[in-house]
Image 1 (cartoon, one colour):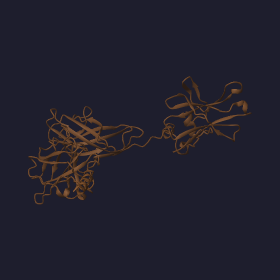
Image 2 (cartoon, helix red, strand yellow):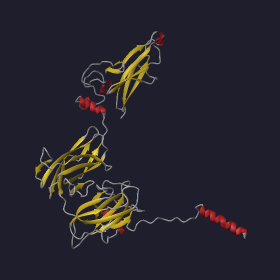
Image 3 (cartoon, helix red, strand yellow):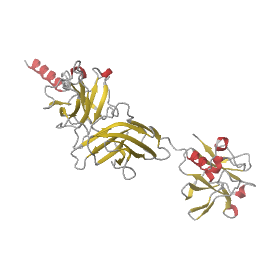
Image 4 (tube, helix red, strand yellow):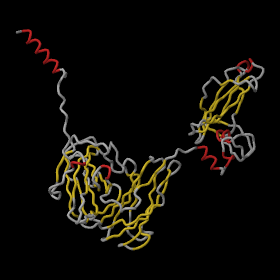
Length: 439
């Protein structure tokens, strides 16, 4: 009897160690995918659900401006409004930070985004206001997705109801530029936005959102006529408002989107359009701006300062015909338009004169050796400097000593290298500095 008992104990131990233990797979919510989207029984009263164990399906689209880190684990509803009009869809009451999107279509491949919103002024829930178009003879449902904005999952609430017409409606918008480059300097974008208002708004804000949905810049919208306000034509009921947004130099490259909001003084009436706003911009209105951040080439900036062009603007160019290439004059702090050839002067810890390398003899007696002081332009890693010494003008060897910084200015640093060979050991000794450009 003891032998079977012993074998049973061993088998039980193996199971406890994880061998042969069945894996229990967590089940996603019933409406985890678009095929099983739930038709709400009473969406005005409110629907409930959960994003716990919700997934992203193969082929499921991300709303514009979102990715796998900011739009996770969706659950789906499909809803047909009773008639055409303005409606609000909200996730107010959810226990997790949500991203709410409204779509038209019936499959992942046919979806068209109506609008997306992941924040409301009151907190982490989301809400969207849009004009629903309902064909009473052939009504088509809107599809609603609720996603988690972060890795956190939890209970979600969903409701939709009719709302009054907005106090102001964006009817058109013209941007001075839809592509800008902020590598060399900040970029200004002027917005001319046509608003139709059914009620007087007293305050407003135009915001520009970066690729990470952060507010990059904002400016107030003042309803008064220009110059006291932003209105450049029309009247309060139908007017065009002009605002300028500045994209700071060095801002991240990517797609930027804008949003505008208007409200009365008490804030009881609020209308917002565009990015991070309740209401989508009208069809055909430009909603995005492409921002590039092209690295600045300091040499191009330098040649531009002297209005050089063509071959005269090349690193190998020599517009002043003094035998020095632009690259040498650029590194030495000289003008490419003047044929002068001063040498660098360092006084104390300051560069008191820019110029070509200064080669002198230091030390006394048998300890005399060549000393080279030269300039190197700051902020340009594409150029390297090499100090060489030699007994004649055809045989050169790179200096073995590491250059030491003597002084620094706003544009250059002065470095010094001393020869490792003493002059008395040679009949002659020469030194030189070479600059190499490596794109």
